[in-house]
Length: 254
Image (cartoon, rainbow, N blue to C red; front, top):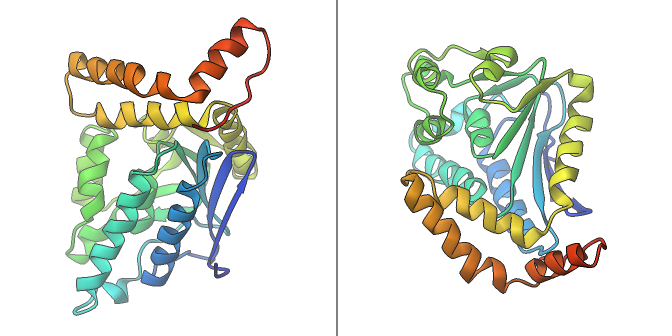
Protein backbone atom coordinates (compact mmCIF):
# COMPACT_ATOMS: atom_id res chain seq x y z
CA UNK A 1 0.00 0.00 0.00
CA UNK A 2 1.07 3.58 -0.61
CA UNK A 3 1.85 5.84 2.35
CA UNK A 4 -1.50 7.56 1.65
CA UNK A 5 -3.23 4.72 3.51
CA UNK A 6 -2.14 2.25 6.19
CA UNK A 7 -3.80 -1.16 6.60
CA UNK A 8 -3.06 -3.49 9.50
CA UNK A 9 -4.49 -6.17 11.80
CA UNK A 10 -3.50 -6.86 15.40
CA UNK A 11 -5.29 -8.82 18.12
CA UNK A 12 -8.48 -9.04 16.09
CA UNK A 13 -8.55 -5.29 15.40
CA UNK A 14 -8.24 -4.17 11.80
CA UNK A 15 -7.16 -0.64 11.00
CA UNK A 16 -7.42 1.60 7.96
CA UNK A 17 -5.65 4.90 8.52
CA UNK A 18 -5.87 7.76 6.01
CA UNK A 19 -2.35 9.13 5.80
CA UNK A 20 -2.32 12.08 3.44
CA UNK A 21 -2.41 15.09 5.80
CA UNK A 22 -3.21 17.84 6.30
CA UNK A 23 -6.66 17.30 4.70
CA UNK A 24 -6.68 13.63 3.64
CA UNK A 25 -8.47 14.47 0.40
CA UNK A 26 -10.36 11.47 -1.00
CA UNK A 27 -9.00 11.22 -4.53
CA UNK A 28 -10.01 8.39 -6.80
CA UNK A 29 -6.62 6.80 -6.13
CA UNK A 30 -7.11 6.96 -2.36
CA UNK A 31 -10.67 5.64 -2.63
CA UNK A 32 -9.36 2.69 -4.65
CA UNK A 33 -6.78 1.96 -1.97
CA UNK A 34 -9.49 2.02 0.69
CA UNK A 35 -11.48 -0.55 -1.28
CA UNK A 36 -8.42 -2.77 -1.64
CA UNK A 37 -7.74 -2.49 2.07
CA UNK A 38 -11.32 -3.44 2.92
CA UNK A 39 -11.21 -6.46 0.63
CA UNK A 40 -7.91 -7.55 2.19
CA UNK A 41 -9.25 -7.24 5.73
CA UNK A 42 -12.61 -8.94 5.15
CA UNK A 43 -10.78 -12.19 4.28
CA UNK A 44 -9.29 -12.37 7.80
CA UNK A 45 -11.39 -14.73 9.97
CA UNK A 46 -9.72 -13.40 13.14
CA UNK A 47 -11.03 -9.89 12.56
CA UNK A 48 -13.59 -8.74 15.11
CA UNK A 49 -13.70 -4.99 14.54
CA UNK A 50 -12.40 -2.38 12.10
CA UNK A 51 -11.15 1.07 13.11
CA UNK A 52 -11.19 3.84 10.51
CA UNK A 53 -9.06 6.87 11.40
CA UNK A 54 -6.80 9.50 9.91
CA UNK A 55 -3.42 11.05 10.51
CA UNK A 56 -2.98 14.78 11.03
CA UNK A 57 -5.15 17.59 12.30
CA UNK A 58 -8.19 16.71 10.17
CA UNK A 59 -9.99 13.45 9.37
CA UNK A 60 -10.84 14.49 5.80
CA UNK A 61 -11.97 17.64 4.03
CA UNK A 62 -13.78 15.46 1.48
CA UNK A 63 -13.36 14.33 -2.09
CA UNK A 64 -11.24 16.04 -4.73
CA UNK A 65 -13.49 18.73 -6.27
CA UNK A 66 -11.49 18.66 -9.52
CA UNK A 67 -12.50 15.04 -10.00
CA UNK A 68 -16.18 16.01 -9.77
CA UNK A 69 -15.99 18.03 -12.99
CA UNK A 70 -17.05 16.55 -16.34
CA UNK A 71 -16.13 14.13 -17.72
CA UNK A 72 -14.27 12.64 -14.74
CA UNK A 73 -17.41 12.73 -12.57
CA UNK A 74 -18.77 9.82 -14.64
CA UNK A 75 -16.14 7.59 -13.04
CA UNK A 76 -15.56 9.43 -9.76
CA UNK A 77 -19.12 9.24 -8.41
CA UNK A 78 -19.64 5.50 -9.06
CA UNK A 79 -16.22 4.71 -7.56
CA UNK A 80 -16.97 6.90 -4.55
CA UNK A 81 -20.33 5.21 -3.95
CA UNK A 82 -18.72 1.79 -4.39
CA UNK A 83 -16.22 2.67 -1.65
CA UNK A 84 -18.94 3.85 0.73
CA UNK A 85 -21.02 0.77 -0.07
CA UNK A 86 -18.09 -1.57 0.56
CA UNK A 87 -17.48 0.00 3.97
CA UNK A 88 -21.21 0.02 4.77
CA UNK A 89 -21.40 -3.71 3.97
CA UNK A 90 -18.24 -4.59 5.90
CA UNK A 91 -19.04 -7.75 7.88
CA UNK A 92 -17.75 -6.74 11.34
CA UNK A 93 -18.43 -3.61 13.44
CA UNK A 94 -16.70 -0.46 12.17
CA UNK A 95 -15.59 2.36 14.48
CA UNK A 96 -14.68 5.75 13.01
CA UNK A 97 -12.37 8.01 15.03
CA UNK A 98 -12.74 11.62 13.92
CA UNK A 99 -10.78 14.77 14.63
CA UNK A 100 -10.86 18.18 12.98
CA UNK A 101 -12.72 18.64 9.72
CA UNK A 102 -14.87 15.74 8.58
CA UNK A 103 -16.61 17.17 5.55
CA UNK A 104 -18.27 16.14 2.32
CA UNK A 105 -17.09 12.73 1.16
CA UNK A 106 -15.10 12.32 4.37
CA UNK A 107 -18.27 12.64 6.41
CA UNK A 108 -20.10 10.25 4.08
CA UNK A 109 -17.31 7.71 4.64
CA UNK A 110 -17.80 8.04 8.40
CA UNK A 111 -21.58 7.62 8.07
CA UNK A 112 -20.97 4.06 6.87
CA UNK A 113 -19.41 3.19 10.25
CA UNK A 114 -21.38 1.61 13.08
CA UNK A 115 -19.93 3.78 15.85
CA UNK A 116 -18.31 7.23 15.74
CA UNK A 117 -16.01 8.62 18.41
CA UNK A 118 -15.16 12.30 18.00
CA UNK A 119 -12.36 14.45 19.30
CA UNK A 120 -13.39 17.82 20.68
CA UNK A 121 -12.08 19.52 17.52
CA UNK A 122 -14.29 17.46 15.21
CA UNK A 123 -16.65 19.30 12.87
CA UNK A 124 -19.03 17.38 10.61
CA UNK A 125 -20.60 18.78 7.48
CA UNK A 126 -22.10 18.21 4.03
CA UNK A 127 -21.26 21.43 2.17
CA UNK A 128 -22.09 20.02 -1.28
CA UNK A 129 -25.25 22.12 -1.54
CA UNK A 130 -23.08 25.26 -1.40
CA UNK A 131 -21.47 24.11 -4.66
CA UNK A 132 -24.80 23.43 -6.33
CA UNK A 133 -24.52 19.64 -6.06
CA UNK A 134 -25.74 16.98 -3.62
CA UNK A 135 -24.17 14.45 -1.25
CA UNK A 136 -25.43 11.17 -2.77
CA UNK A 137 -24.27 8.76 -0.05
CA UNK A 138 -25.42 11.06 2.76
CA UNK A 139 -28.91 11.27 1.27
CA UNK A 140 -29.17 7.53 1.96
CA UNK A 141 -27.07 7.19 5.12
CA UNK A 142 -27.84 10.26 7.24
CA UNK A 143 -31.56 9.40 7.63
CA UNK A 144 -30.54 5.90 8.78
CA UNK A 145 -28.59 7.49 11.63
CA UNK A 146 -31.92 8.75 13.01
CA UNK A 147 -30.82 12.36 13.32
CA UNK A 148 -34.33 13.57 12.58
CA UNK A 149 -34.49 17.10 11.19
CA UNK A 150 -30.78 17.59 11.92
CA UNK A 151 -29.99 15.44 8.87
CA UNK A 152 -32.31 17.49 6.67
CA UNK A 153 -30.84 20.74 7.96
CA UNK A 154 -27.27 19.63 7.25
CA UNK A 155 -28.11 18.59 3.69
CA UNK A 156 -30.27 21.66 2.94
CA UNK A 157 -27.96 24.30 4.42
CA UNK A 158 -24.43 22.91 4.22
CA UNK A 159 -23.89 24.23 7.76
CA UNK A 160 -21.28 22.38 9.86
CA UNK A 161 -22.08 20.46 13.05
CA UNK A 162 -19.46 20.77 15.83
CA UNK A 163 -18.69 17.78 18.01
CA UNK A 164 -20.90 18.82 20.99
CA UNK A 165 -23.90 19.30 18.69
CA UNK A 166 -23.13 16.00 16.95
CA UNK A 167 -23.22 14.31 20.35
CA UNK A 168 -26.56 15.94 21.21
CA UNK A 169 -27.94 14.82 17.83
CA UNK A 170 -26.71 11.28 18.65
CA UNK A 171 -24.52 11.21 15.56
CA UNK A 172 -21.46 10.29 17.62
CA UNK A 173 -21.18 7.80 20.49
CA UNK A 174 -18.96 10.03 22.61
CA UNK A 175 -16.74 13.10 22.46
CA UNK A 176 -13.29 13.05 24.05
CA UNK A 177 -10.29 15.41 24.10
CA UNK A 178 -8.28 15.11 20.90
CA UNK A 179 -5.32 13.83 22.90
CA UNK A 180 -7.44 10.92 24.16
CA UNK A 181 -9.10 10.01 20.84
CA UNK A 182 -6.73 7.16 19.96
CA UNK A 183 -6.85 5.66 23.44
CA UNK A 184 -10.65 5.86 23.69
CA UNK A 185 -11.12 4.37 20.22
CA UNK A 186 -8.76 1.47 20.76
CA UNK A 187 -10.27 0.75 24.18
CA UNK A 188 -13.70 0.40 22.58
CA UNK A 189 -12.25 -1.66 19.73
CA UNK A 190 -10.60 -3.96 22.27
CA UNK A 191 -13.87 -4.52 24.14
CA UNK A 192 -15.51 -5.53 20.86
CA UNK A 193 -12.59 -7.64 19.58
CA UNK A 194 -12.53 -9.83 22.70
CA UNK A 195 -15.76 -11.42 21.47
CA UNK A 196 -16.29 -14.12 18.85
CA UNK A 197 -15.59 -12.82 15.33
CA UNK A 198 -18.27 -15.18 14.00
CA UNK A 199 -20.88 -13.86 16.44
CA UNK A 200 -19.92 -10.26 15.70
CA UNK A 201 -20.48 -10.83 11.99
CA UNK A 202 -23.88 -12.33 12.65
CA UNK A 203 -25.05 -9.64 15.07
CA UNK A 204 -24.08 -7.01 12.51
CA UNK A 205 -26.07 -8.91 9.88
CA UNK A 206 -29.07 -9.05 12.19
CA UNK A 207 -28.86 -5.31 12.84
CA UNK A 208 -28.41 -4.28 9.21
CA UNK A 209 -30.90 -6.72 7.69
CA UNK A 210 -33.42 -5.77 10.36
CA UNK A 211 -33.36 -2.10 9.32
CA UNK A 212 -36.70 -0.91 7.99
CA UNK A 213 -38.56 -4.01 9.17
CA UNK A 214 -41.23 -4.13 11.83
CA UNK A 215 -40.04 -5.23 15.26
CA UNK A 216 -41.78 -8.56 14.82
CA UNK A 217 -40.10 -9.18 11.45
CA UNK A 218 -36.72 -8.09 12.78
CA UNK A 219 -37.01 -10.48 15.73
CA UNK A 220 -38.09 -13.30 13.42
CA UNK A 221 -35.06 -12.62 11.23
CA UNK A 222 -32.71 -12.65 14.24
CA UNK A 223 -34.31 -15.86 15.48
CA UNK A 224 -33.72 -17.59 12.16
CA UNK A 225 -30.11 -16.40 12.14
CA UNK A 226 -29.65 -17.79 15.64
CA UNK A 227 -31.11 -21.21 14.81
CA UNK A 228 -29.74 -21.62 11.29
CA UNK A 229 -26.37 -19.87 11.40
CA UNK A 230 -25.23 -18.91 14.90
CA UNK A 231 -25.56 -22.43 16.26
CA UNK A 232 -23.78 -23.82 13.20
CA UNK A 233 -20.57 -21.99 14.18
CA UNK A 234 -17.77 -23.52 16.21
CA UNK A 235 -17.59 -20.33 18.27
CA UNK A 236 -21.16 -20.72 19.57
CA UNK A 237 -20.47 -24.18 20.98
CA UNK A 238 -17.08 -23.07 22.28
CA UNK A 239 -18.55 -20.06 24.06
CA UNK A 240 -21.36 -22.05 25.68
CA UNK A 241 -19.06 -24.90 26.72
CA UNK A 242 -16.43 -22.49 28.06
CA UNK A 243 -19.07 -20.81 30.22
CA UNK A 244 -20.20 -24.15 31.63
CA UNK A 245 -16.59 -25.19 32.25
CA UNK A 246 -15.68 -21.80 33.80
CA UNK A 247 -12.84 -21.11 31.38
CA UNK A 248 -11.92 -18.45 28.83
CA UNK A 249 -13.20 -19.34 25.34
CA UNK A 250 -10.81 -19.78 22.45
CA UNK A 251 -12.49 -18.34 19.37
CA UNK A 252 -12.02 -19.95 15.96
CA UNK A 253 -13.69 -17.06 14.14
CA UNK A 254 -16.12 -19.34 12.36
